[in-house]
Amino acid sequence: MGLALLRAGLAATLLFAVAGNAAAGERTDLETLFEAEGVNGTFVLFDVEKDELTAVDAERAERRFPPASTFKIANSLIALETGAVADVDEVLPYGGKPQPFKQWERDMSLRKAIAVSNVPVYQEVARRIGLERMKEMLSKLDYGNRDPGTVVDRFWLDGPLEISANEQARFVTALATNTLPLSNRSQEMVREILLMEEIGGAKLYGKTGWLFHDDEVDIGWFVGWVEREGKIYSFALNIDMDDKEQVGLRVPLAKKLLRELDVL
Image 1 (cartoon, rainbow, N blue to C red):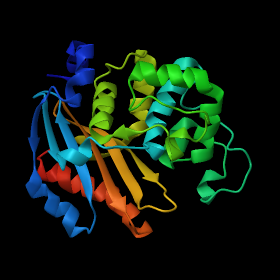
Image 2: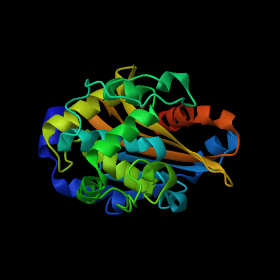
Image 3: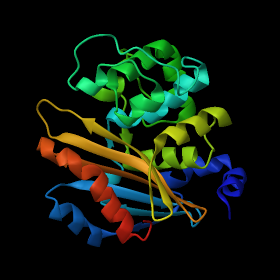
Image 4: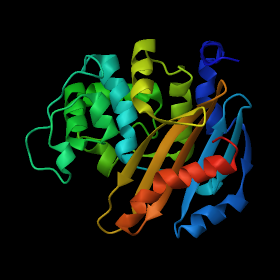
């Protein structure tokens, strides 16, 4: 089945599949991949065609955390859908203030900003959207606990917005299959800028996130999906990071898990 036909044929009820209706299997054997890297974490994989969910640490997969920069996926969609940003190539200001990473100290488009995870540019995007529209759209998208709180440009970094790995997988499944309650245009543009690489005929789409804590361990995220041979496999990974060097584990660890599960 081609991707266009698959997307056209999927009903909106797919949004709820990963929330618990799909056949689920826990792979405790794959916990050794986390142990080998010295981290605790969870990984969720949803096979769209088979309607099957696989989880490593299913209990943690239900636990919510702030999404950190993985929220750039939703932020991009909401910005495009509301008209706060014209398209993924409109150049947006970063604000002119010093940033922790020099690559963020530039005005840039969503296409470039999502690739370098430019926080100040996406904070500008959120301010353009505004708190009320953001709240409405989070509810429409059924994104995590749907709560942006009262600070429009920090809620995905500090909370109160939180989302679980299961909910992340559900959300990106709907984006990958074009079944979010949004225009085709918004979804198509965001899918385009999320393409990371092609591996052996498979396309890997995704976004990382790094949740900073002052008095707790940091959380690393990687969420996305793989398109291969006309099939879609969505995934979400999060790990505890008590050392900043572990930030580099997110994508490689997810790829190892995807290979073990015969997706890559």
